[in-house]
Image (cartoon, rainbow, N blue to C red; front, side, top):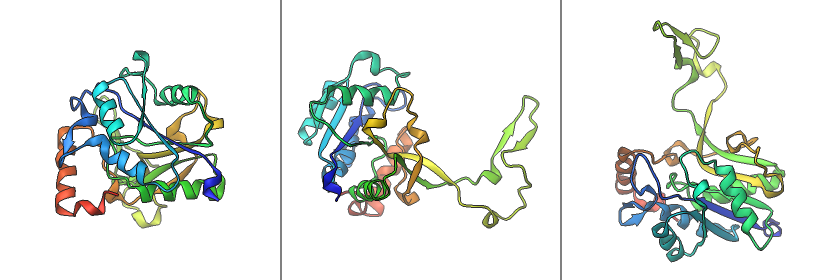
Length: 233
């Protein structure tokens, strides 16, 4: 059934990075960061093509070595203010073949595995969802979240006292950025990927977003202490 659909995976990886220089190809346990994502995509049962969209030749070399195809990203799509949806539309425009679904895999989420990708695709296709993204249980419950005004006064994010038991509330989730799936025919410049309609739940232990140097230390510790085999394909 699933092979009746053509699946395109896109890994966006620009060269610039504020927090970690050349973040996408910084090495962790001997592997470039982007390689963890490319390994997962390549091990998927359903992905037909993997495209790395980049403006950086060093990233492109790693992607080619790992079996992905590389699409050179225009300078205007490689700025801090560039939108991911515009990058995806650029990839789709340049494809010589047609695909049914686009899977966005951000290289800053290295612990997501092929199993997660395939389960998300099966959920999407089985239910004919128009769009889906991966979520994880929220670490910080909204009962404990506060706003603070200029005078320092706090107000709760929820209209109730924080003494209410958490178990009396529904579960809360956070968009973890690991997997986004959209029907390609639905993608437009107005598409907001973080507003994809349906969720695929991933365990919190696989939710690690690499943004700062300390995140790299956490990743290395997880791979060493819990066993790399648990996280890689």
